[in-house]
Amino acid sequence: MTYWFASSNRDNWEIIRKKNIWGIPKRNKSIIQRVQVGDAIVIYVAQKKDGDITLPLAIAGVYEIVSEGYEDLKPLFVTPERMGNEVFPYRVKLRPVKIFPEPIEFKPLIPDLKFIKNKTMWTGHIRVAMRTIPEEDYQLILNLE
Image (tube, rainbow, N blue to C red):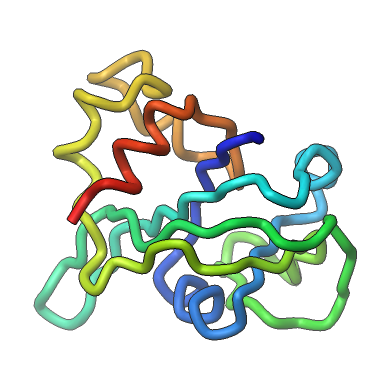
C-alpha cells in the first residue's frame, strides 16, 4: 500500500467531497500510473481568502483509492487561472475514510510530519499534485480530531 499526499484548492475540495473523485493535471500522468486500488490519499487544501476571513492551509480528508487510474477529458474540477484550460484528466475514484468536519490546520503539523524534511522551507514539499508520504505521517493525520 502506498500513502499519498494530494494538494488541492478549496473549490476542488468540494468537488472531491461530493463526487469522490480525484484528478491531476496532464503533466502528472506518470503519477497516476503508479496509483493502485487500496492506496490511501490525504487531501490537503490551500489557503483561501473568503471575504474578510483567511481560511488556513489545511488537511480536509482521507480517502481510499477504489479504482485504477483513468483518463476523462470532461471538465469536472475548477481550474486555477494560471493553469489555462487544464481539466485534470487523470483521475481515480475514492472512498471516504475520514472527512474532517472542519479542516485541520496544516502548519501546526509540520514539526511532526516526516515527509517534510526542511521544516523552515516546507512549501516545496506540498507544491506537487501528489507525492508519497510515510505510513507514520498517514497514521498521524488519520488520528487527528
